[in-house]
Image (cartoon, rainbow, N blue to C red; front, side, top):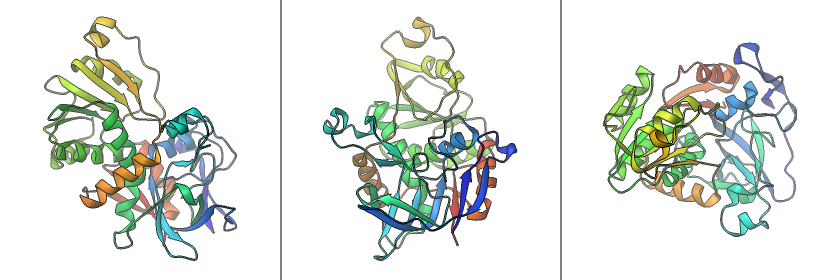
Length: 321
């Protein structure tokens, strides 16, 4: 089969992602073999390719927003970021399996969806409808799910004012969920195309800074320098949730300007399967507008390069023909 692997992590200009021919993988006990129809391109894939995330195994195939069919049954499923957990630790037993120390991840600990086939544990795939285009479903499996968890972690009150910093794949889905809940959304992004998209999706403003104090904020851009201004933009009692797996260093914070008056700073770590099921149920019942740029599997390196250069608005999706 055709696949891509991270050979030597480094800047996209150095060619860290290389195409290879591999044998179709064989599923082990409790696993399924999925023929890939489409795979979303995530900033986490870029972090792995460029070395911001240390590789956990050599020459790993990235990709964790996979839509495909189970070989043998033909069932349509989604393969997402969380690949497995131990099921026995105190975190798993209390319902926070996203914090399991033994958790593994698709496209990091095991080969992912930048390929024609992928293997995944049957207990960690999500059933998906067969009549929705794969490219519309793929971004829901990470961008949608992690945005859903970030929205919960930022403690947005009913009808509240939400700031969204960075407006890519996850942010454009999260904004729609927040607007549907009655929130006033302010997008903070440098990209003219992303500003236009944010306003089309119902944001009250899109610019360099929010025009009013915020009840809550989510930081999607992996830029630590944005943490102080995002905290400063919060109203009293507001919460900033950082949604990425990687963030550049955060500058020193001034207690009075950034944290006093009970402002809160939180991280978001992966998701639970319950998060995934809840979000997919919501998204399939009330489909969001999914802004996508499609690439053939053969152009996976170009898709990641476009993401690295901020040339994308919405979500990039690899389509396997």
